Length: 421
Image 1 (cartoon, one colour):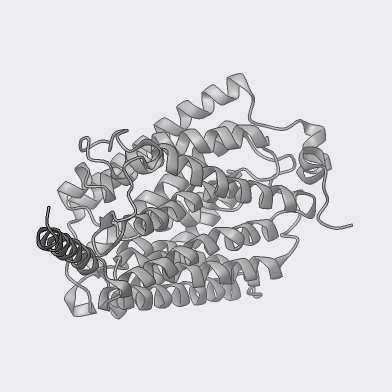
Image 2: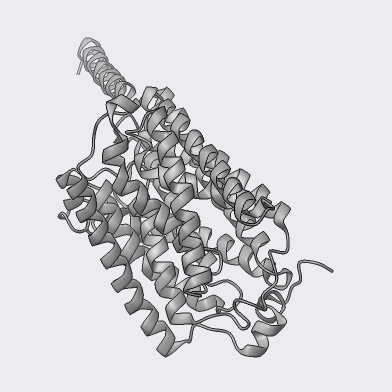
């Protein structure tokens, strides 16, 4: 081969490589990528340390570290489960019910793989942080009385059997996505699955000793507020990032998220001021989370007017749910996971078709019957699958610590540490 031929071949190869690189550069938008990288960090920040501190401050001092430990280890465990099989089940293309196992251990993920306008690795990591926080939310239901190992086994199985399939149904092109269900950032995928499963866990586990009359108030309200503040900030990534682009949709999602949280906070403070004469910091923080949970599924279709109304509805209904479940029914959902996250997420799903009206600044999207169908399916599957997992664990390993361990506190009895020396 002469020099001219070699030169022509080299030039052709260089042009082909250049064309390929140009196509990849055109597919990946640097602004979108930078925003989703930031949003990924914000959503992980919601769990570590936001949710851990929020929950930790609500329990008694002798169980503070046990709560932090569960959230912390769940973050690590859920990340590995997501890599091994969760992502494949959630975002594979096997059928409308589950994604399949073709991408176990992310074996098909290449450095140049693209999802929309961002690298697939970035999309995968963003979705991983959702898989981290969702089972961590359930921790609030069973604090102060549960064994550590069964919680970790439940988390692993629950992610594969409940969370990943539901994610596929809604966000992975599954049967609910085909019906047109709108769940922008996780009213069903995150809050309903966690809330319903938490309620099942509570029934399987039983009440804490002394509930409700002998239990002390939250031991660190200031820590509760700090954790809630981290969640509030992180939620901008949770909802704003779910647009998967740095555009006007992300900006509006962030705005309506903040509006809803603010309204629900004020609603909770007002109710406590009227009923108890003394509004509490813990109540204000709980109202914030209620507003955030309620707006989550609708953040992509609401305008400012709809955000005001959904925050009002979330504050009122979640407060009523807490009072009903804890006070009237005396169900020991310790940190109100179902009343705040489950009720809030489901409420947001069901009312978004009405509040997304263009007259309120929204997009006008949403079909109530589709939303109702999706809610019924997700609630039923979450309850049934969680119950089966928990029955097996209860029979084999047991779910609950001994009375002595509960009395001493889980920090010392399970982890050999104390938060305060």
